Image 1 (cartoon, rainbow, N blue to C red):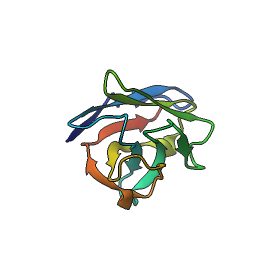
Image 2: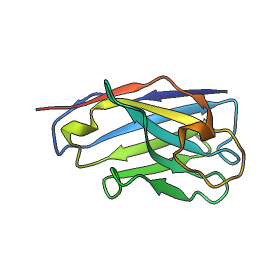
Image 3: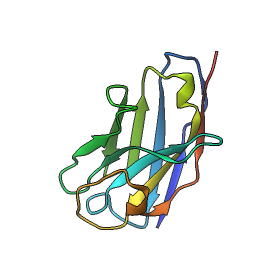
Length: 125
């Protein structure tokens, strides 16, 4: 099982960016995927997740209305579209696999067993 997050970069406040997560070794038909971030000196924060079976999604209040999670099961990709970015969104962004197949996802970090490396998103003018 592997997950690889990519697509981070420097973006101006108010701008948009899409980060992607390429997965291998498991099927998105059966396992949910979540997005998390960690800023320097801060705890990891769960942002969003997408469940396997019904594709239901969840968003933390901090990103609701600005971020959108989606997936392409055939391409084995999960995306996080980020709009209206703020300087406080600056962090390393990680994707992870739910440890239990078929369940409705949550953004509790303890629910995930495999993690990708982070991709850095910097929001600055």
